[in-house]
Image 1 (cartoon, rainbow, N blue to C red):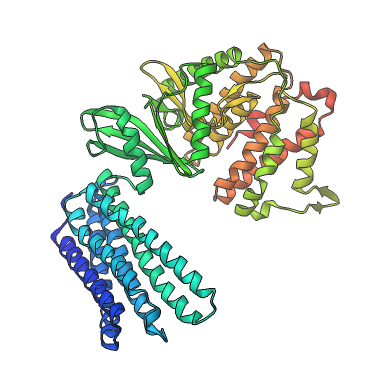
Image 2: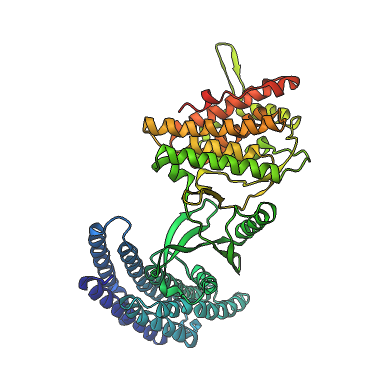
Length: 543
């Protein structure tokens, strides 16, 4: 977008003002004087007023934007740039404060501080043209200054650390080090400014590490460079990964999906995708690129056409939902047959719940009860119920294992109505395991949808029940008599652990009570009667 003149004028004035303050700080460090110090301190209000003017103008423009407009990203970025410029001005005043407190100004390493501040001024000089011209190359140059200042500060830190070991003039040495640290923080502000400009140009919030990973990954797409592509946020995972669709003006839809985050998580996802290609080709997307940078990594993944099952459920006609469910059932039965291993496996649902219980209690401390008596009847503490259910579970492993998705939520299943095909995404937890794990996660992912419309709610619950019936038919076909018993524990695990993501107290309590009910039922069944147990699915999935 073309920024309004009021915003660009104030941004230019702010850049000039910050540059002036850095210039004066250079002069002050070289030759401290009360008059110069006062001049820097007194000008703090002007930079703050310019920042406020930019923020107000941006808010007015954002209010006029349509929902989802890319202009909003640009305006938010300009707000952030103004905030970080004002932060640099504030750091100038902090430097003055520390220098004024020095008893012996000669402890200042002016020969080092001067070049560091010169780097900051070069960065500030690039800000206004980078914003005006939407220039990513200039934004990258601004961000690169942070690394150079870090190296400069590293040398200062070593110098002052060695001097402090002599235990002389310690207060002066610490204050001099604080000056260097403030200048180093100016580099952090410049890095944030560079990231804001890059984000505005791409249409989505990115940091420099993510941008470089994206640029390296995009090279696999052929001739198109980052500047010719549009980035659109798709999701943010709970593990911290960000997922974006990469689009091109030359064609409709996405050309690929870009995912970045912790290296461990993305390494697991790559392994999961490879596992699907080895065990059941055709369900998982192709990985186009995998890049590592320090503790982070990124994946460029084939974009799969179609709709998530959640979108089909909530927004498409009943006929399409029936079609998708039928295809999902066919696909799963095929996967379960093809990947079956006759080695028994214990999903340890109660162990999984135990591992996440502390996180549940942090959000809902009221669930951590100590037990009580009601009219002479003892109501056991949840921990005791968990122990009893876990003891029962150990004696009832699954008779075989299959290759499972591992995070089988509605939004991780893609249905292509044109090809009538199912695909899976977000596969970092895929492994050989009890298929009941996927069944329980799928059913609870329906229940926890926070939809209040009665008709929609009935449709959601019916999908969970229909899916259960499909899975139970499979269990009957293969002679899995413990299916319902294990599913009760799997559902209990998913109901209880899902509450850590739900702030609606009413919904969370209904889910937690269902978990407790299922665990109590499972623990109370005699060992010889577990194969006759039938899950009260209609009672569980009634709203």
